[in-house]
Structure formats: C-alpha cells, structure tokens
Amino acid sequence: MAKNHDFTAEIVWTGDRGEGTRTYRGYDRTWRIATPGKAPIECSNDPMLGGDPSKPNPEDLLLASLSACHMLWYLHLASNAGIVVKHYEDAPLGVGETGTRGEGRFVRAVLRPTISVERGADLAEAESLHHEVHHFCFIARSVNFPISYEATFIEV
Image (tube, rainbow, N blue to C red; front, side, top):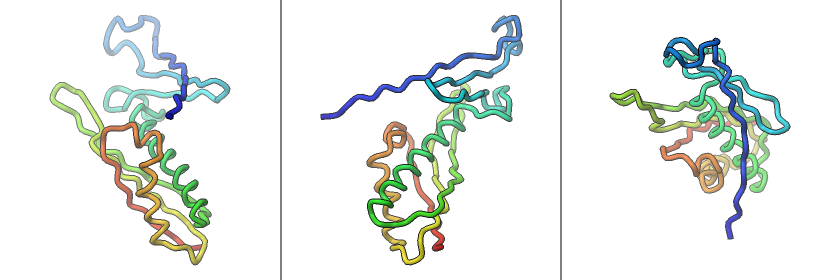
C-alpha cells in the first residue's frame, strides 16, 4: 500500500517596492522560499521576464531538483550494485518553449552527469543504472516531459 508524504514550504513575495502591483513594471519578481528548519533561498523570475539574473528562478529550481533527485537515487543504486562512485557532478539541460500567448513549459531535459567510479567498475552496469532511476525518483516520476541521460564515466 502506498504511503503519502507531505512536503511544506512557505513562499513569501519580497518584491513590493511600496506600491504593490499597481503597475506591471512597479514591482520586483522576487520571493523567498522558507522550509522548516532550513536556510531560506532568495529567488527571482527568469531574466527574460524581468527577473534578477543573480537569483535562481522556478525553471532553475525544477531542473536542479530533477538532477539532484536523479543523482541521489543513482548513488543509492550504485551502492547497492557494488559500484563505488567517488565523484558525481551534473550539467543538466532543460529545454523549454514559449507559446504564442506567452505560456511556457519544459519539453525535455537532458541529464549530463560526469561520474568518477573506482577503477575496475562494470561500466555497462554503471550506465544501465541511469535507466533504472526513473522508476524511483520522485521528481522524475512527477514531471510530464521526457528525460534523457548522457553520462560520462571516469575510472579513478
């Protein structure tokens, strides 16, 4: 039987310049994510939409969440399979599109991890684990766009 999990966060808009949303250009597209017991994250909208390019935006956060979830499950499956991972980093790519009314969506994502494994690891098995992660990763199982993997392995 499936178990439910509750996740909570507080999203606080921080972009009021004193006039609220009286005019479209009169407010900032910034906010703070606060989750119980964790450091807050200052965010903004995509720079194409008037956001602060120095802060993460929702698209950045979704792509990072997808990549992190994949990584954590990959590490778990690798450990179970006896594959020793020494280093893992990803440079994921999210491809979005904007429709004629300004509506946007992700159409696909490519996870491109570089993974250092202990010399002698079964690289075919290490590669195959990426295709098992989608059975487990909460984020990947929740999005409606395809996700592909282009892993590079380094034996150390």
